[in-house]
Image (cartoon, rainbow over all chains, first blue to last red; front, side):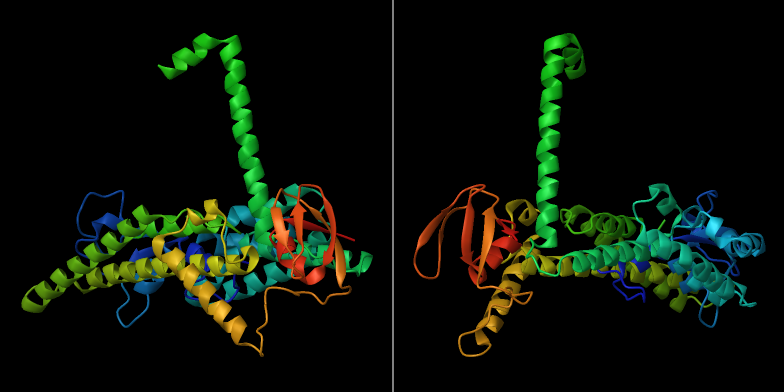
Length: 223
Length: 196
């Protein structure tokens, strides 16, 4: 894969950068001069102590650590008691995509700020419960595509890998003679080109048709 | 809000799997300028708080820390943007061969094109250095079963000279029975299709 996705986030991991952009609520513990820009609803130049804001995780985790934390992170609502109850009841029925795009990644960051350790166990519980369903989905990928939309980013990745592995296994079982194939990127590049040409052609046809039937419309459009 | 531009840059890259979007010079420059600006502001504030100890109540330290976090974030996004593009480019060297299609090449920045040609050169030098005559690492990715294979030509490729000196004309939809070693690269590039 050209843009490798690693589960264990590295400094260069695109997924990790996207996940840490998610906003989490936090409360300021000290006065911060000149940082009114962080609060879009106020016009003052300074941030007062006690202000509550939703800021990207990368900023919050940077500010809440160290000897003198500037902010106190609060748990996002999807990791709070009510939502935990929902997940405990039946994790499979939940639309995790709607909870958060990066449910697990975000969870594994905020769990350090949760003193009870509940977030940790709910993450594990959710993944374990949903994994069986995920595996089933990946093996029968022809079934309803709308089910895929309920998965979060990590689950989608697992799902995709699972589908690929299943197709490869099937291929290998059916024919063990190995055919050489064009490289993955080359194939995709060609497909994209074909779509481009097709698209151009369609557009051309369309304008032609328009010209013949309603020239005035085109004229008006140009003006 | 800080680092929005850097985020856009990364988002753009994440949207396109298997392909490179055009190098976004404009946004990269904008991110660099934002970073410089933040750094300058920090330097200024650091001087003020050093010289002026009287207003201990409104310390500028948190401000400096927040800006510094933004600088670090910007740097991370920029490095990740370039690193991941180069990784993609490296895979392209193995999949497309040493000559890239024109429309991909037009998406690269000048330094990326230079990197690509240098990588190609290094790779070629390495392949030549293996054994006595050198080994082409880009072929025989799977163990061969037969010396000759049947292929169908998918494009009007033109003339193609075989190792024994004979020249064949590759037309679209023509079929050929060729030594495996000589057509593997063309199969990888999507010129031939391997027929069982």
